[in-house]
Image 1 (cartoon, one colour):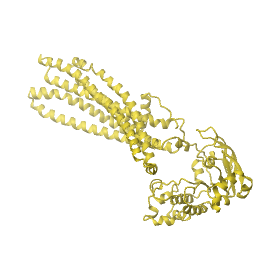
Image 2 (spheres, helix red, strand yellow):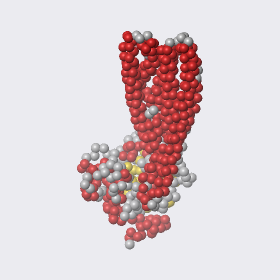
Image 3 (cartoon, helix red, strand yellow):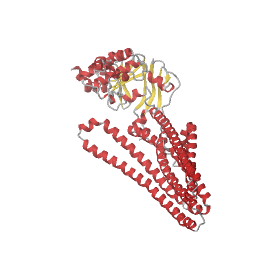
Image 4 (cartoon, helix red, strand yellow):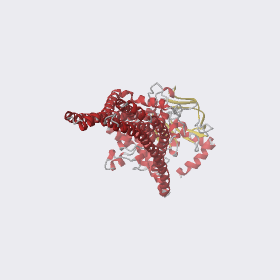
Length: 586
């Protein structure tokens, strides 16, 4: 599997990179900060109101304050609620927009990566990065803002306690530095556990995607119990990590409360003695204690915000590993537009897969003229599929050039190149949408008449209209509601509607039964009519009717000619003929 670039573990750099995604929403962030400042100010003011409430109402019996203080408290609570609502709303808005943007960026890159990348990666892992890891990042800025809000609240409350009694406040806040221990220690642990959790969730997604996609194999081997056991192992690992996260996350609160209790205990002892001695009023003392009690709450919340931030950064690490990896590059596009295919040439083309030492193709030289039908035969592993995959640039050769109309194929835009190539393979892949949408895939705006015409030419119209919903029938994931022959005819209809001048057939009938194969072969004949065709052969009729047959072995074209000439002069073709094709003549 491809290794992603490991990002530096510097939380500051990672946080700065993450917060850049929130930059377009400055107005919402500013409103949220203003609302946050309101919350912080009203919290401090609420603590201060205790002093006049006790001293002027309960002790001095002042009736004017009896009306003013409750109304003032109501206004403070109203302002605090409005501020908290505004902050949460605008932070949620920003988080969701960043979530949307990051998912778009991640999908945009992944969908444009070469086929080689998908052969090395597990689909479930990619799904987890787009869905789960990105979702964690959403909480990064809200966590930062929440932390800032708590800091402002602490500043407001500190002002109140120092205003009430600077000497006592100094002793009370001396224990606050102890709060840095859980803040730093547990934050680091949660970051580490958060990344492990994301990895395990990714593994779970891979497991589920693989088992549900391969359910026929599971049932064919009656291995449901075995898969249940495997799932329980995966599920247990996630539960264990989640439990560790809970333990680490929850340990910070008791420690913070213990630190707070130490400070408050000292204050009650010293402040109470001052009230008894008459050196301080009860209102001042209780206002001081209330502010101090409130002060430890934002400290705890600050730790909680840091915990959330560490989880967000753990997700950010995994997302940026894909976005920033120098090893994972999108397909390189050309600048020229390809208009039609008149000639395809291979000049000294050599290609090797990364995991192999022997080239899959060796020094291929070949020219295919417009309208020519070229069949390719050879034993398994000869390089037939690799050969045809170089034409639409699914792979990039290490040596030599593939020329189209005399121009290096890498000079053309990928879109225009692939628009001129239609492919029908043995893997008849359909999307979980309607039959009409599958036939018209990427052919936007195709009228119903054109879709039906393509279906008729592919001998698919009759079975389509037999369905109650006709062309609106949903085919299911990978076309699971259709037979193999039906799926293949729909892929042929899709290629017909595309109407590309160059056609590639890769064992298009190899997975079908005899009856379906005959119908599909008729559809393929319609598809190949008046087109340049590269055909990896399966049926003898395709071989015989080809203008040229290429015989491949170990990545090389060892023989070339018509069916008759190869039967006379090519020992390998003779052997392939006797093994694969002779029975068709019986």
